[in-house]
Amino acid sequence: SQELEQSPQSLIVQEGKNLTINCTSSKTLYGLYWYKQKYGEGLIFLMMLQKGGEEKSHEKITAKLDEKKQQSSLHITASQPSHAGIYLCGADDNNDMRFGAGTRLTVKP
Amino acid sequence: DVKVTQSSRYLVKRTGEKVFLECVQDMDHENMFWYRQDPGLGLRLIYFSYDVKMKEKGDIPEGYSVSREKKERFSLILESASTNQTSMYLCASSLYGWELFFGEGSRLTVL
Image (cartoon, rainbow over all chains, first blue to last red):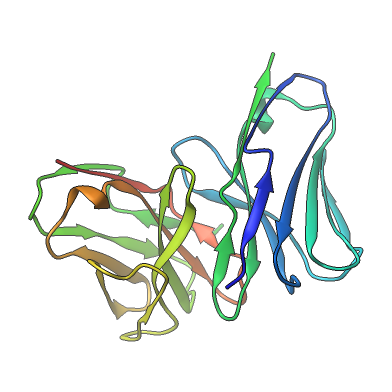
């Protein structure tokens, strides 16, 4: 089965700073999904990446999938308190969705 | 907007009790899923369903069963709750692929 490792496990940044979260797979990724979870709530879909080298942006969040399709990064520019939460990557793995353990982001005002 | 509604946000049950967690989606999605989420372990798939009356085991089905009698409703059943089933339970649905729409979660505590 596909293992997804996220780093860092947790991150505390000052408001306005940029940050990057990584998701690394043990196998080639055929579909990589980023979700955000507010504390104690369900997950919200952010973006999906499928092609090697693909990059997508939504507001101040940019996600990239490397050419080898084994690593994805999520970059937040000029972070705000509203960005706080847990970010999870998920991957399509043979009719199942595997998730990383998540990265907990805290943004200090 | 897709809405996935889970019946209870917080439940406290005793060991050995039967527990029902209900999930309803309003967008006619074919696929529905039950995950549990535990610190350090991420989300783990318990069961999923691609159609009415159809169910497939996920990674950790032991101690759980499911029911899908209607397309919009997917229920998770703990026949005899145990303390190691204390967790956050998340229901999700999807139309195609893996763009999942999640409910807000049900936090179950088994004493």
